[in-house]
Image (cartoon, rainbow, N blue to C red; front, side, top):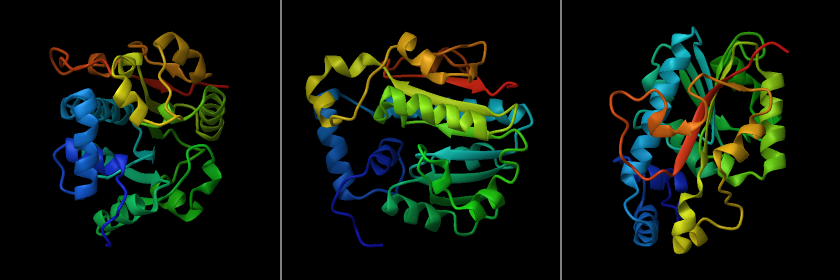
Amino acid sequence: MVEPDQPSTARMIDFWLGGTHHYPVDVAAAHAFEQAYGPCAPVFRALRAFLGRAVRAIAATGVDSFLVFGAGVPTMGNVHQVAPEATVLYTDVDPVTIRLGQRLLAGSDRAGYGYGDATDIGTIDPALLHRFVPGWGRRPVGVVFLGLAAFLDDETLARTLDELYRASAVGSHLAIDFDTEELAGHPEALAMMGPAFRMRTPAAFAPLLGRWTPTSEGIVAVTHWRPDGAPEQVPDAFHGAVAVRSAG
């Protein structure tokens, strides 16, 4: 693979998680962001731990297939590693990340990677969807929607989540997060996120879920969603929820 000349958030996160699938340009960007914000590895480890707890909880309800949007690099405790008995379709819009994901999953018969724009479900290859999420629209599935809400305006996010609700079967689950207002205290780091970046309070985020019904934990800091022991002490950068598609 030709080494990219532009950093990727997905590969920066891989670096912060201690992975090996990133390039010098990603490390340089990660260090630059940390100079403006502070250490990021603990924050993203906490977010990845939330993903793991959410996926295990969803799998415990009997769900055995997952559709992942904005998947990034499929390593370091990602969905197919947390739920090895399930089938998983990872999707992203970045061609470099997709090629990397396909290379990493080339030997797997339970996990695949392809193009998919979360705001347009029709962009997903139907053959991949049928192979790795065979019950889509007919059986409960797990939808993973992490790291995306911050880059969608309210109208687009609400519409996207409603489309996912209508397209999925009753009993499906949605794992989702959003960025809090924590970065407002770090204006230089906030500027690095670009004009599309959106911070939200839990009260502002809740209505955007539409008909998706959060589990009893509600929308909470990701470290407080069914923690394994005492919640980790990290900056309150992300809140999240697992929500259910009920009847109707």
